[in-house]
Each structure stands twice: as structure tokens, then as C-alpha cells.
Amino acid sequence: MTSKLHTITAVVASCTTAVALSAVTASSASAHASGDGPAHSPKVLNNKVIAPFGMSISGQDVWYTDGFLGTVNKISKGTDTVVTKGPQSEVAGIAVIRGGNTYAFTSSNDDHSATSLTIRSKGRPDVVADLSGYEKRVNPDKRYTYGVVAGGKSCAPGELDAYFMKMGGVPATYRGQVDSHPYAVAYLGDGAWAVADAGGNDILRVDSRGHVSTIAVLPPQPVTLTAKQVAALGGPSCLAGARFNFEAVPTDVQRGEDGRLWVSTLPGGPEDPSLGARGSVYTVNPWKHSTNRVATGFLGATNLALGDDGAVYVAELFAGKVTRLNHGHRSTVVTTARPLSVEVQGDWLYVGTLADISFGPGAPTVKAPGSITRYHL
Image (cartoon, rainbow, N blue to C red; front, side, top):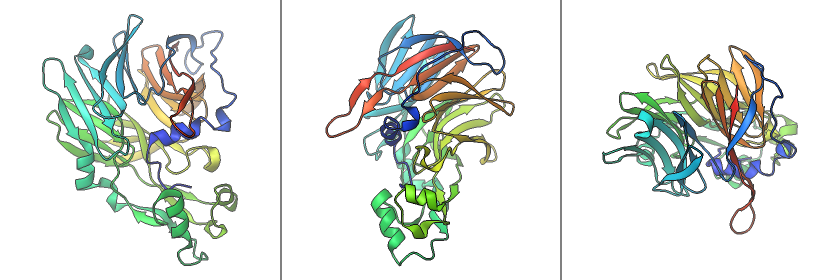
């Protein structure tokens, strides 16, 4: 059991072997049903993508990132082109404004020691915000305590530390560490952008000059471990009953019409079904720097989108579906293998799926590509 999911790539690796997804295939409704009905009339726009971590819709164009290739791509009039290759090996978040004349994307090197947000506007020099530098200077979640915060008293001295160091590289109890992995970006207005940092457990603000500040830190994700869960994770039996604070892992950020931000989170630690469906959706008040969890129980919440009618769409990577939250009602709108990203524009829902990838000795093997598909709501 790792105490922190340090990279979304780790989720990708475990997802490809998850039993919960092994039998899930793409499907659609045979007839249109409005409101909370399933999406229908799927049209595949790209069937060669590997890891579409993020998407952004601008007019008729679909912009997306391929995290494994480190590119920003655009699908326009049926043609898919590489818009740019990021300065680092991974490109994840993408947001587009002004018809594509301005866009911003996040990038990271392999160990996430160098992370950034690049703001690119036609006819102007790039603005590059040093996100990893900000994390090293400020470390916004350093006030939080993670790991075992109660229980485990019957364990032998050093037993828990040894176990967690072996499994996750951290002691049994620790404060927020320096860790940056920007994964999503949204436009805030007035030249500013919001960044969801999955490593820093926070939502950051980047202004038009590249200055970085903290909007909010996502709270720890507590779990009281049962004996069955501890056994499934291969932990020492004395850990049963302990209260464990997992780190939050924000995976997407979107701005609502009222200015509040909507954020999806993975729950830290094992992201597969072993500890249950613990992904959540939060709203963030950017003026009060506060967070509020509005929904939980998602199995791998890797992305979300906001509909014009107030509905929220959540990609559940491990559940193999996109879930709609509509004023308290929850329904499945799309069932598909490995849904990784989601966007909505009007009556159209766009879903990016992860390729079927085999991780073993040597380079990863793509057994089947992912896709970007448009559905009608």
C-alpha cells in the first residue's frame, strides 16, 4: 500500500491489469433519452491516441494532450495534427480560449522534479510558470499530517515505518512533502489560470505573467483500515483499526459560471478497487480558499466536465464509465473501457479513453490504442 500516488502513470499501469475493467466494452443507448438518460450516437474522432489525459473544446475543434507522447493535439474538420510538443516528457492538462489563439498546458519531466504551465498566445512570447519551483519554496500542504494518525499501537517499534518505507518510500506518519505533478488546467479569466497539481494536493493560480499562488489545498482522505483491507494489501495485522490519512490527488479543475471551481480527486494510495470507491468531487471557493466535498464513491475519478444545465460528468477510470451528477441524482451516461478524460459542449459529450498498455520489462507495449469519441446527450 503506497501512501501517495506520485504519478498518474502509476494509475495507468495498474488500470491495465484491473479485473474490474477486463470485461467492459464501449456501448451506447439505442434511443435518445433526455435528462438523465445515457448518451448515444457515438462517433470516434481518433482511434490511435495513447493517453488523452486532458481535453478542451473550442468551437468545432477538439484539443487534447497525449500524456505518453508529450504532445498537444487538435482535431479539426476530421484532421488530427500535433500543435506542439511539450518542453518535458509528459503533457497532461490543456485549456483553450479565444478560438485557439491562446492555450495553456501543463508539463512534467519523468520524475516530476521540473514541472511547469506554459501559456501560449499567438504573436506573443510564451509565459512559463515554474510550478515545481513554487512547490519547493512554499509546499502548500506542509501543514497536513498524512499516514497513520491514530491506532496501530500494538505494532512493534519501527514495524510500521519499515512497512511504509518499503511500500511507498515514506514513514508511517509524515507531513506534506515537496511533490509537484500538474495534471489539469482551467481558465479563470483576466489572464489567470487554475492548475490542479496531483502531487502537491492543491489548486494553484497562475497569472498572465507566470506568477504562482495557492487557491486551495485539498484535505487529507481518511480511511479506518479493516483487517480484511490490511490483509488484502499485505500489511501487518497490527495495522487493522488504524486511521490513515491518504493524500488527496486532484486530477481536474473546471470553473463554474458562478466562479467556483470544481475538482475531481483520486483518494491517494491504492487507486484500484482494493480499498473501495473513494474518488470524490469537490467545489473550491477561490475567494475564501475553502473546499467542500459534494460527492464521493467514484472508482478512479480522473476527469470531470460541467454541463450547461448544471450537470457534472465524471470519468471513472476503474469503473469503466462516465457518471452524470445532476442536482443530486447519479446515473451512468457512457460505459466504455478505461475512460480517462471527459468534456462537454452543449448536447455533445467527448470521452477520451486510455490505450490498453502492458507494463513489463523494457518499454511499455500498447496492445490496443485508446480513442476520443463524441456522444450525443
